[in-house]
Amino acid sequence: MDEKDWNMLVTLYEERNITKAAQKLFISQPALTYRIKQLETEFKTNLIARGKRGVEFTVKGEYLVQYSKDMLNQLRKAKEHVSSLDKEVKGTLRLGASGLFARYQLPVLLKNFLHLYPDVEITLKTGWSSNILQMLQKEEAHVGIVRGPYNWNENKVLIQKEKIFIVSSKKIDVKDLPFHPRVNYMTDQSLRDVIENWWQETFTVPPNVSMEVDRIETCKELVLNGLGYAILPEICIKEDDPLYKEPIVLNNNSFLQRETWIFYRDVTLELSQVKAFIDFLIESRQPKGELS
Image (cartoon, rainbow, N blue to C red):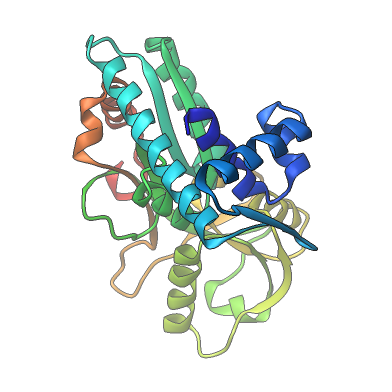
């Protein structure tokens, strides 16, 4: 087995479909099927079976998939380490970022970073902060940009604090919120918990949720059109938005806030591109809330 075989097995395992895997690998379907049969001959066992739901891997096939993932990971680390030996800032930076941070702040940051270090190649995956944490744990990312109070036993740096606001098209008295329609949106569980905890500490009745949408941008548009209020983090609110904005204040007179962190491992600092990016984030951060 070699790198091509490792990639082939991992791709087929992810796609669970011969045709889709072949397309992703830029090879023909017969060529993929032929190579699988060669591997089965080499290992003297069946690796896959075709069922109604697509390709299913045998126990031995799944073992070789995990072996392939491990080998690809080791090869990637070796290439990254060799690339960093000349001390120039270049190589691939594998970055995972919260979708909200990626939407509102990351593009400008990456543009400015690549202006300083044009020889760095960025691979980026975005998603819920919980997913980014899993990427770091699996060593699929060098650096994770995570929003919320997640546990991480290695290095982490707070790069931003922001207030959480009640936003509406016209002024609403906070004590009257339960009587007004609220627009909810899909978000990370940690933010939902923060908002829910504040609500339960403040009110004795549940919120009047009239609309639930999948995107925070849709939520904002509905609020802008007077269809309800929403509870939004500061990151997605522009200064010129025609919204009434009131920060949530806790019982101890502090603001309800949302934190953004960068998580990384010590070992990744041996890579010049990773160290340069972390230093760049720390130097260029523009904190909000209590950090401003």
